[in-house]
Length: 264
Image 1 (cartoon, one colour):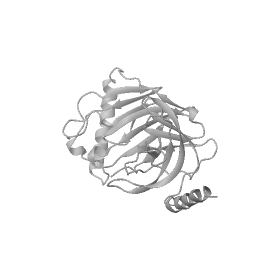
Image 2 (cartoon, one colour):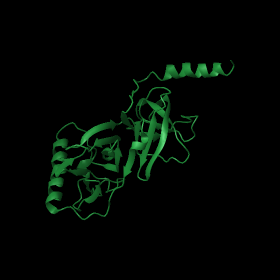
Image 3 (tube, one colour):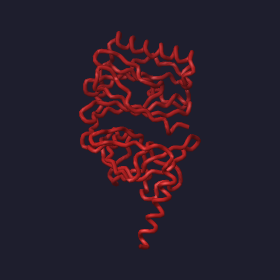
Image 4 (cartoon, helix red, strand yellow):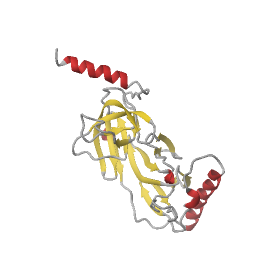
């Protein structure tokens, strides 16, 4: 009886604190995505010293399987309890704590599903030959048109006016049947790496400009035999940080996940 009372008390406290957002529910065979992060608050996850969480809300004690994907591979974790997290200098949201094995490394993106074994990393094939000049010209035109139109609207672009595209040829990266052209930025913006430029996706012989001017951490992976691309948008110093996931299994890229909860 004495052991039951503290557990009951913790459950009541949890119910009071974790009613902050509607949690996501998954049915058998479904999967969704999550944004992993290490909590920076003091002792946010007392049960797990590493404090690895998802910036997403899942049912309390739901125990969903999680595949954490990094550029070195995939490892398994499991959802645990939820708690109220406040981003330093930003907003607040309900996060989900992860149970993570000691040998599981931090991932850039999470796939939350009942079959994490159906998730695999697709390695990037670097050192590709340069893109044909006509392809580079069309891709560069897509980005320049977007920058011109965005500067005329209220869309937040960050300080792109002082950080235009470099004239250097874009780096060509390939994964499966997909190619991305990653452009470089000029060095006019202090504190930003020039290789964190925008990307243009080549899919089914078509070119698509993806979201963001300053981007990083591009990962290709397969989930239930569907090719996906995940990457982070940094907004060139405006404080915005967004994780995007695109489904590339169709004729055109389809954005299936977007999370900006860690922006400040």
